[in-house]
Image 1 (cartoon, rainbow, N blue to C red):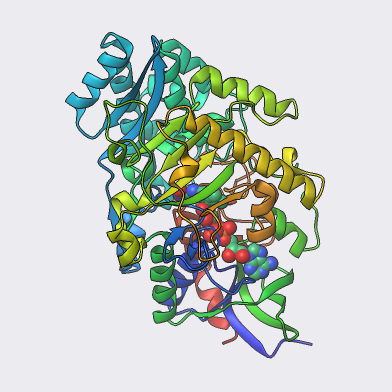
Image 2 (image 1 turned 135 degrees about the vertical axis):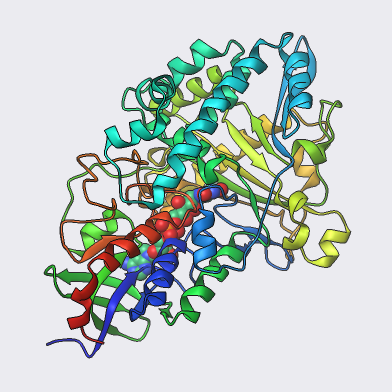
Length: 530
Ligand SMILES: Cc1cc2nc3c(=O)[nH]c(=O)nc-3n(C[C@H](O)[C@H](O)[C@H](O)COP(=O)(O)OP(=O)(O)OC[C@H]3O[C@@H](n4cnc5c(N)ncnc54)[C@H](O)[C@@H]3O)c2cc1C
């Protein structure tokens, strides 16, 4: 029986990428429906009041934007703003029995001075400038290609047009490059961290997962800057949903897709709601859920190893920022950028080795950021006036496997890792973090932690992987051989989420590319149902 409802395109999932795809298709005159299982859109790009009775809307999962192309913002007419951070990072340390730290700001002279004070010479700063100079060249050349058809490896290499830079980022394990170019263990670690966000890898891994992760962290916007979404991540999702709706797309929340049948020309999408089940027909299906979920919806197993996330995400609300042991820096500056904790190169490698051996890292590495310093609008007026601040912490090397074994095991290990992570931060503070935590409406401290197991349960991120799987190279490979990197084994089914080639992060890129792939099918739609 053919379904009563029919559209040009059904989008499975209303994450930010699904909304981008829907907006592009609707603007091109296609009839589109988005089916989202949760009661809200946005997936992992949302703002939420995480603590009951407290008027603070935190970016609950993702929090900084780098990879969203200006082209998408302009073409969709998004009413959405980003704010630059004045400080890139601060890394506290103890040197010669003294509390000190490394500060990287937008002011090169000040950053040079900090490197010299911290390392005793200007060699590390020179190495830093050279490395990030190469990254800037790469960003300028590679970023514009992400919204074009997927190039071959040779084509991209020609675009990069610099063998040394190509080899650094695409051929040699990141650890080797870092060890060759930098001497200071802590400076080495600060460079390495961008290769490990959401990615469980050693600096030296031969499969270069860490290189791919670094790549996406240094090319965003053609500059590699990570900016603050004004109003939080939810502001971006709201702008995207508004753009999709105003172009004519229909968005239905509370609709969980349970199966997709597609023969290359037509498709039927089955869904379940609280009230029952239904089916919609479509010429094309765009899947914002993970590749793993797509295989299950098609009734296939893709045979690929399960994806695995590797982070602890902690959200906090503070009554005030904590005092630092390093009195040479104002906490308002130190927390305005990425605040690195226990992230020297050796510490990161040690934490990876412990986790790979099945143990929680004894000195868990993490990075912290205070959103409300750059954008107090996420706090209610009263909290802002009283000087409250949000803190978000992203812990590395916490693979899902360490939290397996059921909800009790997950809860126990989450608490254990959270305590150990905060203890590492406390080493650099002049007062325990716990003393600064605000209390929620029930008098409980405002702190919530999410393991990969929690993220899989709440958001369906496969294995808690924040990118739906390992990040891909931005060129054609055996795994991604289609024209846009969004194609699947079925001609009218496309991935439009983070798991597509050039997916991952809050970028809208796979959403854009899937829409382009569908639109290229062109006039075939003219025969399609309405
Ligand atoms: C803790 C954390 C921190 C992060 N920090 C950053 C950051 O600072 N900056 C950054 O750029 N990226 C960050 N990321 C990564 C980024 O958030 C994700 O890569 C991005 O949200 C992926 O977007 P998406 O739209 O492709 O998928 P998702 O956000 O995962 O959305 C997929 C949607 O599909 C829905 N869905 C799934 N299955 C079905 C089904 N069967 N039927 C209907 N709907 C379904 C889901 O409910 C969800 O709404 C972070 C992620 C996490 C988890």
